[in-house]
Image (cartoon, rainbow, N blue to C red; front, side, top):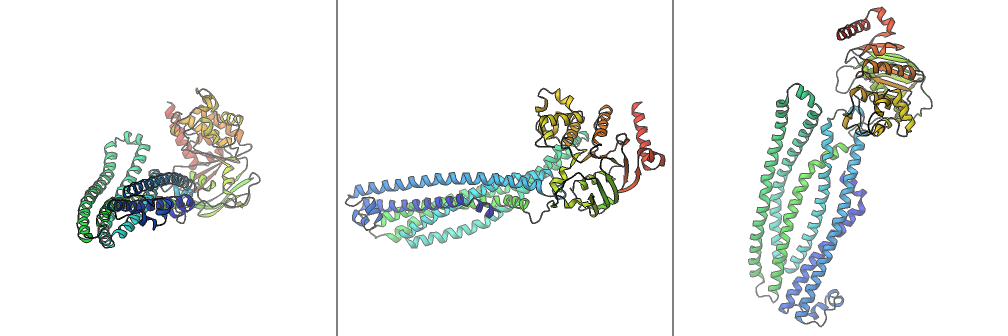
Length: 594
């Protein structure tokens, strides 16, 4: 995943690499120039000797300088090299800032696109809290890229230091490298344990986020059932696991820096003694020894930083794995679309021997459903909860495809049609009304993105929503709040009805759409439906049977099968399941009125 993203931004990756290498070259050159400057003080470095180096002797104009002047000139050159290094370091920071910001933005776009593109059956298996937690792992991915850049930069500088150290004394350098490699090997095992704690801490955070979203959505029932203590206990168990993982990781992290500092002092002292013994008697021993110790002292913190960066990279890997997991496409299902364009309104919809079994379910939600729905008719589906009414809507919208059987529009499988066009011919008002945290106008325009103001108002009037919208201080510009909390249940449903009507669809589906309306509003909606049925196919899924009295056809479902079929009058005359439901609801309504 990272290779693919970084290849996309290869220009900036290349700039980051070039600036890292440039910084290392200037850093190593500075150490070498310092050695020559110290040699000038002791007489080991002369202007004539520098002339033989070519670049320094000719371009810097050092020929003929005295020892003191040569020392000052070399110190000035070292400062210039460090300023150039600082300039490259700034450039590297700018490049990586651009790279990480675009990378994180790209990941957020891809992740959101993935959420809305995965097939409905698959995305519905995730908890909302789990999906939110995936987005929270994007920042650690950006941090990983920064840490990798720092690691490359530090490794390049260490390599430059090693070259300088080898020039000064290959024997001492070899001993230092061996000691550092052994020490780093021990640290690798230490870091592996840190990664396990990081994974455990991440999993605990994911679980907590899931609990948090779930219980906040269900806060009303938590209070209604007095289950605050139970909810707190559930969250505490997850929090405690995260606290323990974080604590154990912190204890190990706390040991790293003191260990490095202690070993740095011991290492410098040891190599100073070894170098003094090994170089004693050489004419340039003092400048070389001073530069060696200074370079080694500069190098050791970089080793510390490198190991810290590696530890941070290990910490980020679980987050990267989660981001890669959700962005994978080979293990996920996506909606399939046909290629057939829709050129006219369907004259009839036919369900032929349709059965539907949801994933991970042992029984059919629908079984052997066969019926024909002609254009311009109102067909109602009634039955007890779980009878399969909403499953029919899922099939018509192609949120699910039939496990068995066929759904046809004018004799053509609806799966053969372009999916976006097919869904564009259907307007749905769900029982769980979704209102977005934006203005009333934008909520309505969600049904038709290019709708004019006149079309929006006309749709609102059909749904009997215009009157209460006009009473808002900001009218259609009123922001309704998250999940439409500023609206009553009935107002939310009427806006949802207007949104569906605005699409001017061939098929209008009302899934318990009038359940939150009072009797007066329900009668107004029924009048609107009578007007709409002239040019639309109306499908009504209702629990309140008073909503479907005027339907051309009432289909009674029970345990996923059609058990009765007819008009309101015909079904009452049969004295079957529908008549029993009607009598039960009528008795309840009479009791309420009394």
